[in-house]
Image (cartoon, rainbow, N blue to C red; front, side, top):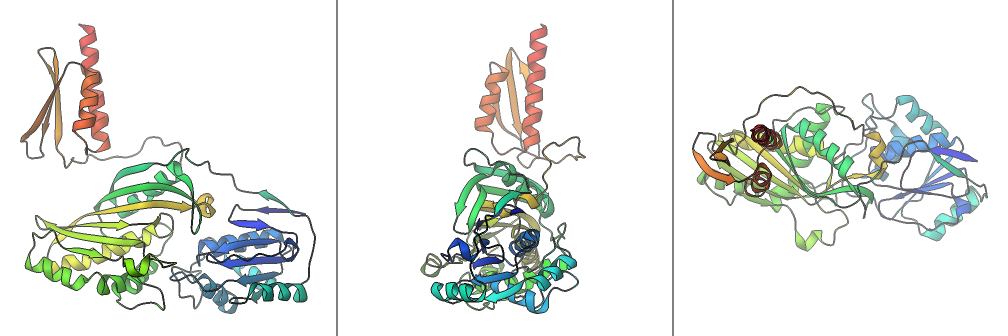
Length: 445
């Protein structure tokens, strides 16, 4: 028997009638004769989508056996699965009654969901001891010893050969920020196994967003983004046993006091919100990803820095960017200041391998429209004087900041790369072109 499946975090057994889903980090040890495919489920969206597609592709699985000790806080994939079988999805492909983060099956059709619900029987073994699960499978379904071969229908995405540490991206808005972050992690991500499965990871991805005005992201309805902001960021209520950022912002971060401090002293560097609680989160199975925020008012604008210890760039990134933008909008209104840059620092920026083939990345990029953007660091005037190459660095207002004098274009390249960091990438490219031009003129003499 041959199953043609998408790649994922699963193992193959010998019983073509049974799929076993392990909720979260839980792992059950079953003989191969009791299952055909066994894998983990962490999320109520892409995880469920992939599970449904693969089960339908087998054309033999009739039973979905769900096992685990407890649901995954904040995401609640087990609760979403129960709701899916009981209620289905609405016209927006949102699982009716699901309470976890973004339970929307946007990459499936209504026909696929209904076919899955009709064909597969939900066997709820959540919270049961391992031996009881084995007995249920033996008595209710029975053993099988079919050799199952897997052919993967999606192409393996090659990982980057070593960890990449420290990438800085400038983006004009949050949609471009998401697109560029996805591209860099997809192409430069090193293969790393985390507590939640295999990932492609870039360490310390820093994205500076010039205009963090909240926007609608491709494929994500604005009402879904706004709902996340209202329930998860703005509301101080805790969601069951799990944290919400809103609860952390108000309870641990004392956001109200931080706002009041900014009102009293607009020059302060102490408007800091810490969402990480060492006493609780070091031991937690689902600690917050957003750990730190700082707000600075400069020249009538509010500049915001947000640090994430862990960031799912495909699934969580757009929701977090939108919500940060909305939060900063609220603060700007209360503080009577304009919107400044938003800098998002993702210590571990990653994409789960299960999701890699759902991302379409252009590996060949041709001409694109572009527009001139002034460099906040200023500009460079490069010329030759008395046989020496000179690079004068001016601030945006035309004041001379510093000068560099080198004997050759090659030496100037190294000196500027070391002593003038922080320019926009296109500025460095222009510097290279100018140095090449001076070098060619010298060769003609």
